[in-house]
Length: 127
Image (cartoon, rainbow, N blue to C red):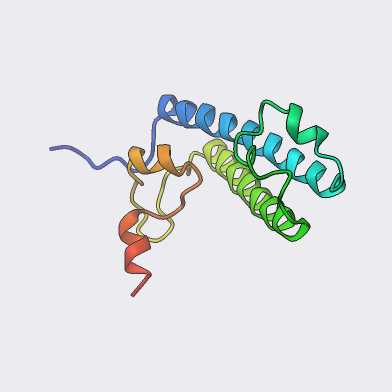
């Protein structure tokens, strides 16, 4: 009889750590660029030369200050979520649904590495 796994193995956690760190790197670059867009509203020299800025490449120079500010805040929240996920990896509680206590499937975590709810819990909570 298969015992249901209650946590991810260290090897699996390591794989997730790499995914998260990669996303974190990109998120921080995007955040810095949003900030420079905010501070540099007249010239768009920064946005033109930056190869890392795929997200807003098209629209970065046309973004309004409010939009750039909103995106920067969203980006900051994303960065904090990813950092919190890294802490959960350290504590070995990563990938455990905070509602059901079951493991969140790997596919979901690969798509949303900072997820703390399984799909069931998410859908259940939206009645």
